[in-house]
Length: 206
Image (tube, rainbow, N blue to C red; front, side, top):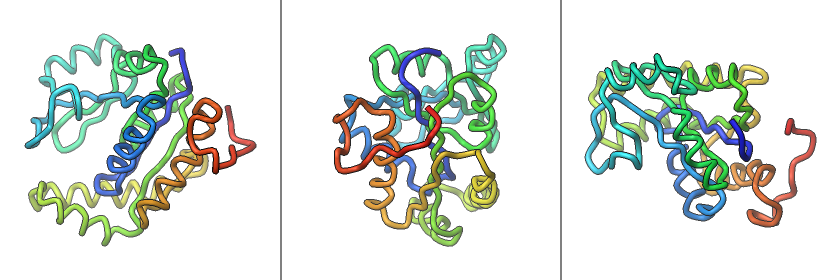
């Protein structure tokens, strides 16, 4: 894979990574581009094919996985999610920095590739806060919510594994979390394009 160094955003559902990503693309949409993942789950109300996800059949996705067309994929709650090579290349072809939103299993898969992104984990301050956020959405059944909470507990624990992430953002205050995100992304953005008030961090792998 060629082009600017990508960015991986990971974290459990409800941690706030999607909100942070929307803020980033609103402010710096000319610099960063979102890699739209594929999934076999059905669209939720308001979701648009090709925007939130590429919604495909299981047979279609499995065929493309078998053909080596995916960088990573994982199964959750009976549905497959994954990042295709074509989705990343489409962003890079626009000379944008590609941002991928993937789960912890996907992170470990990408570690085995030559993609070499910046790895960022977004976490809620506690499992109790996460549960409240998920319940307030009113989009989950109780069974689905409990599965997400169980996944989140594992995610929060494993995200502290040394060397797995370049930065862990605890999203207790949205603006503070966004500032932390912009600070690390100033490393990969063209000079002067992003936050000039944030000094470039030194000593990170390039």
